[in-house]
Length: 480
Image 1: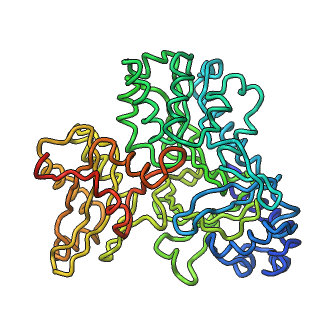
Image 2: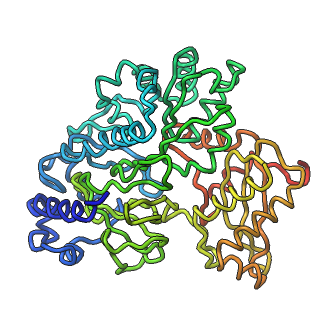
Image 3: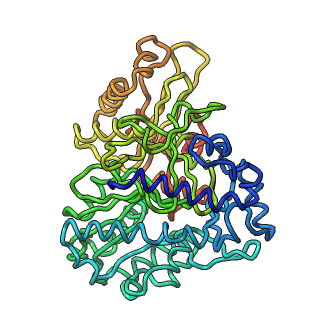
């Protein structure tokens, strides 16, 4: 977008104009900030825990706390460390959530000429659209809130029914979605990739057909929430033919980027939608005084933690995602991982993008199909006996599991010089690969009450919590 920097400057001015009259603005002296440098002096970088006292004031019924008036919704979301989080959505910020998905579809239609999908049935899977009230404010999952704002011209083609979307139990809901859609003219299906795969598996099980044969006019898949690439090959295998895909980067805190082209790699930053973006070099995110950059100073190839300031009343807010720019004209990026999802038990700082790239390369080279995986460290007090453990659910267990593990290990050594040094120095031994039983990850997520919806398995973690939770679904490599 040619006007991205100008748009960002204007958004900051607008945010300051409104923010200075809020409780937050008065407490941080936003009224004295006129430039970005002055803004950085006034507004600290925070996470949800640090913002919680302001949210609590809103829940008590106070006005003009973080933004003018009161939010029109709270988006309820699960935090990894904060428990349930309540993210404000204001009258000014709701268009960001509604219009961005529309813009992604319009860009797709303009580029490809494919408008036929708009005539068929489309799945817009959401959390329950039934909302509770918190401090007098309607509260629910973001997808459920957005469900209330689906344009009228799409309502008649929207699947599943409102009643089915209100079902809380995931497996019951999935069954009803299949009941309602299996004989319909489905043309667009949206959701996070693990959910879509479960939906496709159930369709194939019931019909005995590939999804592309069952739905001959199915031509567009819209997805977000996790990196699509590790799921692409199995999803396309389930469909049986190629369909176009549109990737989105939404969150309860805002809709940050979307795929605007089937030809260009990466997602277009949503630079003119009420959000002023900041970027912190990923290695500095936990520093007391990290480097803060506006959009004009980002560089291609660098890994940044994404910080937002928005007309929802979020200020200096670390959303927990890391991104890397592929270009700055226009500003296109890829999501590289989560600031809290990494392995650095030995100083290697391996990130999600690296393990996903290694797995994709290994599966492409061997033709082996992987359904899901996660990685955790195993720390031994004895030198040379610690390692990274990869828990992998294969479509079919490879005949030579050690060879596949060795290939993965070499790819990670090529990708991460710190990991390579630790292997070379005999601080770590090569990775251990532990196969997981079929549907083991689904069963694990079900066991912790996080099956379906927007829940996903972290690609990697710096502890053994997920590893220990997977114990009952692990297979002994010696017996497979």
